[in-house]
Length: 263
Image (cartoon, rainbow, N blue to C red; front, top):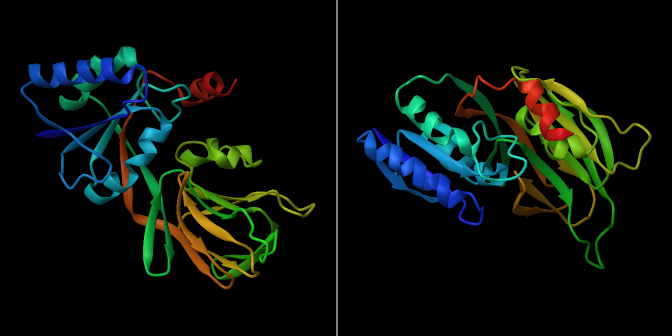
């Protein structure tokens, strides 16, 4: 067994947690490697130490190698992180001994211009800072299962997973999807309409977003800008065949955690 460790060095607690993790792995005789988000080195398990942003940075690695992920919170909110810094030693020992259950989270796949992008939380098509020659409001034709559901005028649209429903989507007025909900959520951003509501739809349906005017815009995946889009660009968004597998902390109830993190 080989364990990968990905840590955010900017977090104050990261160094101490990483030392604990390495100590447990050495005591257990487990081979390990410090990896980067673009590491070509395949591991059998990944330990991520940081906040939610740190976890999102390794989504491509998770998608590529299909490895189970143990998340240790060294950040502030840490909604995606299952275990606290105080639980680090217990969590690592339990994971390598096969004592923790796992949950599978679907990834969103955004296809555009021959490339695929993967997200754990959300894909966003959004207006960028406008140039003098472009329009200031983004116009989108949004279709689900091949049928138009909205001609949107505003700043953009968010397509979020169940895990992403507590992130940007929630800030834009979306609802929270409970664990086990096999749905995506489509939420407008600053829509110029009285009908500014989210749409929840099954993950088996494909969503297409077409830019219908000359407004500078782009695709943002889990908070990271990936590419610009132009008038008549079409972005296809669907459930990926790839997935993320996380070790669960069954000592913490989801709704209790939701209340504690959001209050």
